[in-house]
Amino acid sequence: MPVSSSEEYKELEEKLGYTFRDKKLLEQALTHKSYAVEKGVKSYETLEFLGDALINLFVVDILLQEFPQAKEGQLAPMKAFFVSEEFLHQLAQELELEKYLLLGGKKGKFKVNVSILGDAFESLWGAIYIDTGRDTNFTRSLFERLYKNRIITMARSSDYKKDYKTILQEITQKRWKERPTYRVVSVSGPQHGKVFEVECSVRNIRAVAAGSNKKEAEQLSAKRVLELLQEL
Image (cartoon, rainbow, N blue to C red):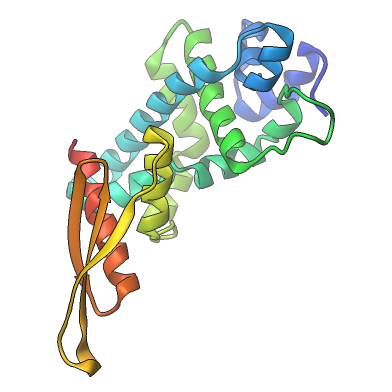
């Protein structure tokens, strides 16, 4: 059940370690477009757009600080996971964002999925940035205080998702509303040692990789497309 007054945002603010000066901004950050359309108010969409860019910056900065010698190809899958819907959804759950969300429609009719919670988490950081007077350093330090150690620990222990196909799909669906496609280019070698070449493509970005089976080749080609996206 959504909260009904700014007073009830206190628990969320305590978890964040930040008190909003403009509670209306916080409310907007938690307003889904379904509710915004019904009530004629602003949704979190523009704040989400801003928060997405900020979180990307903060995560990349943390990784570069911790792994200064790492190559871009090594950093790309880490970054892709730590800005993915899956990871941001986990952080949103810890803040219990679902109980603060303002959603339209009848009770029980609207399902709060992974994507909505991830979007709300991004919009929250966009709202914090604006509420601080667009103080990037303060917003970054707050984000790092909450999440830097976890990101570093997971990255160092490789305790993050290495399913490059899923990571790539999340990125392309969010950016273009499209999914990558995979095509077997060739199969060669003897029966006991076949080599599969698979092409992964999305829009005008393509990459081919070889593996000992189709699944492995798909993962490696998705990894290469991720690296190309980082370069672009």
